[in-house]
Image (cartoon, rainbow, N blue to C red; front, side, top):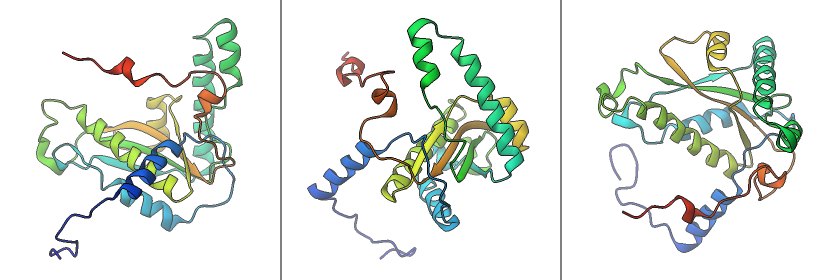
Amino acid sequence: MTRDGQPSQPPVFDVAFRDELKQLFRWRRDVRRFRTDPVDSSLIKELISTAALSPSVGNSQPWRFVNVADPNRRAIIRENFERANASALGDFSGERAKLYATLKLDGLDKAPVQLAVFSDTQTPHGYGLGSRTMPETLAYSVVGAIQTMWLAARARGIGLGWVSILNPTELTQILKVPNTWQFIAYLCIGHPEEEHLDPELVRHGWQDRADISEFILNR
């Protein structure tokens, strides 16, 4: 054992584990339909702790989590979403606009837990290693942490949905966070109403999965 109590030898991940891990990847869904059952606060803390195991540029650990529990702030954020969603609808026309109008694109109405996630662009950790040449890697690190949380939540039977149709400037003001924090994501978390393997946007005809060969170049 090492000094921090961790095994001195790396674990061996067998075929069965790798198959289950792939199933976890397949079953991770962007959840928009939640039950209102509460989620224990200790589980949320555990998910955030797991997210913090993610790699970050220069070990900068720039992720910052804001638990949005105040009903008034939630209502204002809901209004923010509705305005942004109405504006986004205007970007489409014809049948595509009709389809967009039918999509459920948030879980703000029922999700018992809502987290706003930020990147601290002036984090004191890491001394700027790696992020001086590419400052965007701080945000990338936070996105990686969110993906880790997403998978950890799925493994515990908890759903997570990422609401991206928001005005970031307004949201930062609503939550009164430091102006050096860059808004990355607004997450809805709770028990899903339904379970299905196919992504919701595939299910409702917005966009099918593309063949991975479309995204690979050889040079």
